[in-house]
Image (cartoon, rainbow, N blue to C red; front, side, top):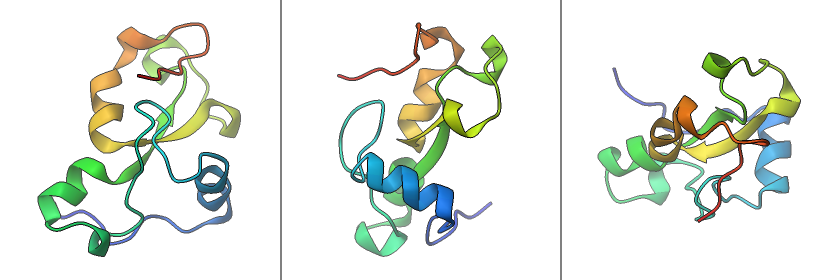
Length: 92
């Protein structure tokens, strides 16, 4: 399945994007906002911003706005449910 060329541009996404200054909540590095900001589609697939549950749903985290942050797709996948610390935020 192909990845969307741009991210969701709703009010909630923009709010998170601005509060995080376009950076991944997990690794702290900047995220591209569209496919055209990276050299290749495979890079976009890994680097695109995704919604990350601070406390994962699999660990009982709620599916509400206050439990969401933006993270690279690769960071989000790597985090998994094992890093559900007290607040779930991991900075390296």
